[in-house]
Image 1: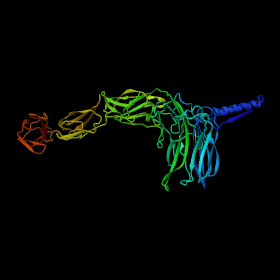
Image 2 (image 1 turned 180 degrees about the vertical axis):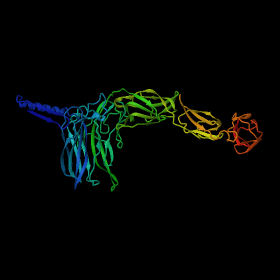
Image 3 (image 1 turned 90 degrees about the horizontal axis):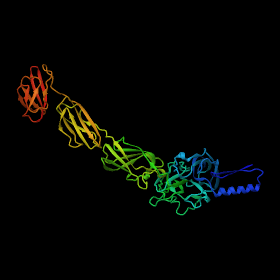
Length: 573
């Protein structure tokens, strides 16, 4: 014959006896086991209770009742049903909620256990339905005895009941329904002594209402707080460093704490759900749901978080790829962990940090904006404080102090100016960007300088004297160079074609004293400047004196019975 004793939580006892065992011994054994069961408490370490609106019919509404429990052992059997009590509207209801799916390991949720932290966590989800009037206030509750042994923050925890509660307030008539805030599954929180931690408490609100997350006392019954151990309370559920007490941002749901000692604590949270009462011009709490989760604080697994690579694809931005996540809240606001240096001179700390932070406000890819960065080689120095309190991950691991040599790319740039200038005309050219460079060297082929840039932002002025040409700007960074160039095809080079002479060339061009023509001209010759003014008339000859002419551009013109001719030339003394 067999007898089952099944608790309402995560512990099951199965007794088997035969007729050869006296009934007294059986009863004595049963009493001892039941006593042991109560004395050693249960393996239940937390849970949450909420509800969801399903539908309405007349003056009644149907709701799903949702219960999630967390147990600290893996592989144990759990009861397939639980009972949630609902009171309100002058009635008391007992709602049987059934297990939705097999229990699963909270590790798959990214609970982030430290290597020497708490036990594995299993999650058990239950659901059931209830129908009641839409004009009353209702309290949903579930409780069991008792809590696990060894909870640091609760006095004699194994003797204290765990009580979960949710509230639905419909009597005010502001709205005939409400969906309680849903808690995202999360088995436990973990941390390391003397390390700042930030943990996001994710929730879901589907009605579009305003929500607020608040710390509340852990309850042993309706309206009755558990007895906290000395030094602990609902507001201080974790023994923390005085400079970093426990805080919970009611809007973002970010929990911050820096533990001062190893401990196992219980964190009680309430998610309040508000709608606006326009008649009374204030906010009305239409409901709330409650959650309890354990926090395991250990000495930490320690160790370092390495940088797999440090690369720069976008100018001035350096991306670090880490082998583990770090907490955003553990990085100083001034980014003093990251110093940028070039040529042995510090440019300062990183000026901005961006990352795709996860729900725990952690990331393993960090993008840093570098101050006063110059293209080319540089070094990022990563610092870690002596107490490893900056740039830390889970369980006390810290970003490794190291120096990383990085090449920063040049900013993309083009040469702005004409690619088809007129021969002997002055053309202006400028770089589209001079960011992140130390200096520029200009190189010219096929022309002469009218104005060589005095600074990086000044334009270059060029007079093209050949049929083709090229202008180059060599941009200098730190132990690196990059060339931006433009090639030109010069227009109207040489002379107009005549009937007898196909082409006449002038050399040297520019000329200093004498200009030589490639063909013998005929008739009188005139020299004009580019302003359309005749300078002088000279006798036809292949050698034209120009030593007396001022520097500048000119046109030599003449006519014969074959036609009219023009040759452009430059005088440069």
